[in-house]
Image (cartoon, rainbow, N blue to C red; front, side, top):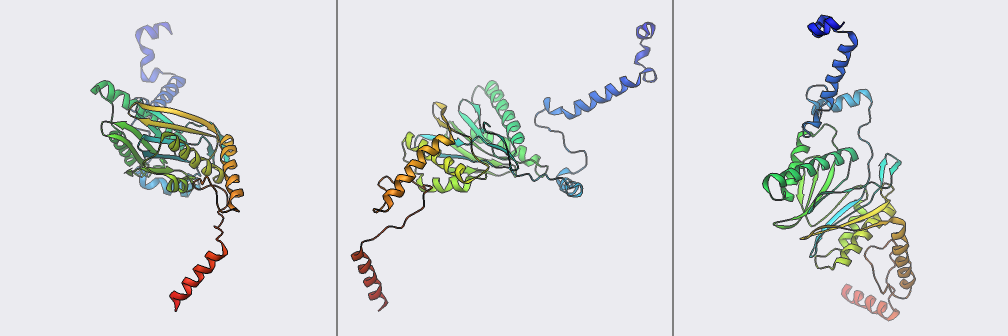
Length: 319
């Protein structure tokens, strides 16, 4: 055996042992399966041609459920003080809660943040790739990557893997030379600028609060309270949202983590406010009216003379 090694006979194809051949085959498969370590923009595609067209057929034929249920609540809005991002921290797998501490707001650089909604693995992976590219861009060109460039990069990746099972919907928020930016991108290749966004299964409830309370002229504390209130009401009505409410603020000085508050603590605060409104509603309305409180909306009780006056006015118009 020593002579074979010295002469190089062990490297001849017909002299290789079976376990050596198996080891080489396993290493080759490992290199193919982890090729994205060398090029993170090129994930391993399904092992058949035209996967965007044939993947759905194979999934239906094999009875594999790829349209899994996923839920979250993330929101972002712009106001005079910059951009506010807020999100819950519950990660679910169907009807099961996998984690209550998922970090759904990712720091891409000192002036840009990204949110996660959809498949956790897809969002986390591509956010990490984007964070790496932001750092490389800063080292090469001596300036930060703009929010528009980061959004275009994610859209190009989404378009390349469209139809292959990528599930991703995220917001990119930051501050660059053009001021505060808030952009929504998803796995269908959509890229949209806006002032108010909410993504996830709890977004209808959060948008109800934002539509009522959002305005451009707000103080920082009013913006923080609005974001926390919107996420709280979404978590109280959406079973797939919950955990910790994380709040971030982005302005010309960069991003700051304002608070990380458990939903139970917010419940004690906002539920108390709602109960005070309910008790005051019987006497003509809540003195400290809050947008979209979870309490039932009570009709305003009019005095009897005002009711008679309105009835008389309607009768005269009918005549």
